[in-house]
Structure formats: C-alpha cells, structure tokens
Image (cartoon, rainbow, N blue to C red):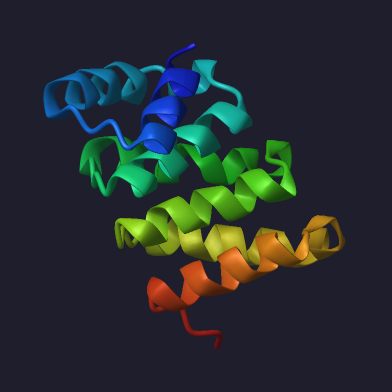
Length: 128
C-alpha cells in the first residue's frame, strides 16, 4: 500500500523529490479508494518530510471532511498536525475538523490533544 510506503519514508526522513512527487500524483487521483488511516498517514508523512505538495494536500482537505467520522482520534490529530508541519492552511477543512472533534474528545489521548492544539495554533486558527 502506497500510504504505508509514504509513511515509512516520513519516519525514515527519506525525501527523494522525484519519488515523492510521483507518489503524490498517484495518490491524488485515488483518494476515494483509500481508508481514513491511509489519508492520515500520507498527510503525516508529508509533514514529517516538510513537503508541501499543494495538489495532494488540497485534494485530501477537500475529500476528508465527509469522512472525518471514519478517522480514529490519532488519525484526526496526525492529519491536522501533518498539515501544520508544512503550514498548509485550508480553512474549510479546519472548520470541518473543529466542528467534528468536540464530539470525539473523549477518544483523544493527552498526546492527541496536545498535537491538535499545537497544530491549530500553528495554522493560526482562532475560535470565534
């Protein structure tokens, strides 16, 4: 599975531009085939590698809001954290994320909460 490959690259710090570009283009047009965990792993990997592939991140942020209930608490936290690491701002996704998360807070570990708060602050989110 390509999401696991990208996740492994992120963990190892393997940042081969040509490979990552090809992998991102491949994934961008297949998001509907991926599980929520795969989407989370991909965004987290890009964050770890400091790769802001705008096409893929825009596609994920456009696709994910309707599937937020499929994400685990860690998957939610890792997704927003990955976006923050590359400072990728997508207001519609952040709004959907922030509307969804309160009903799931009991599922979050302390680390999930810390990563989420850090990510929202880094993305410049302000509650209204």
